Image (cartoon, rainbow, N blue to C red; front, side, top):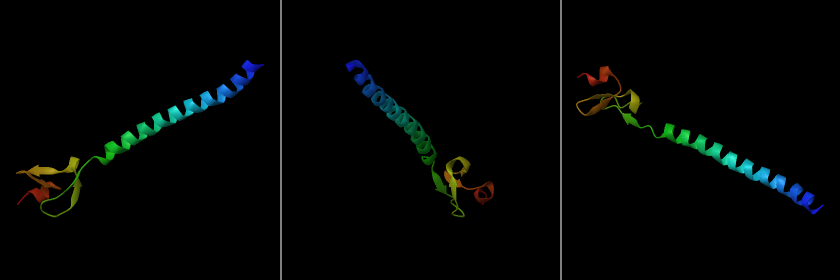
Length: 73
């Protein structure tokens, strides 16, 4: 009878602890993906002043431009 009472108490506690562990793992995975997206830099075009994502910039003579048109004199 005592073993049954212990099991009735232990199962919900163990289930709850597993739930919290899995929830924290999922939240960490989601937050790490968000942090990667936020870490991209946005840089201002030297000529027109438009802010452009670092992946889309045109670099010429150590300066950053938003397009080929702005990089031409």
